[in-house]
Image 1 (cartoon, rainbow, N blue to C red):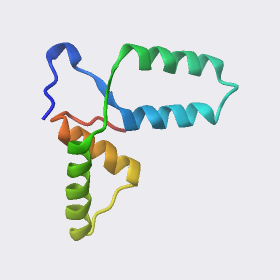
Image 2: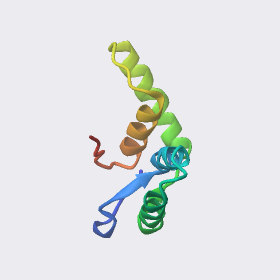
Image 3: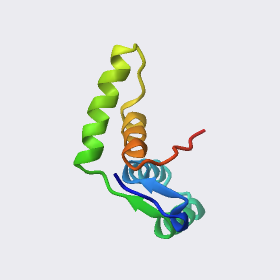
Image 4: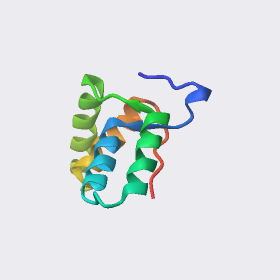
Length: 92
């Protein structure tokens, strides 16, 4: 389990980084947005996805399906990443 210190109060999953980059690629004309996103991605810790995250994803997805609950694949991966990092997931 990954432990985050106080100085790392905020971080992103590499899955979230991929989603940010995808959305940005869809709007190449948004120069200011690209600059802001690059600043954010350079300034914040990006957590890597590994075997532990994959294990938790499989377990979480299976359990939720049994309960009749589903999330989108990327959302499920991000949630599993938060569980693996023992982090609080903030979303809108």
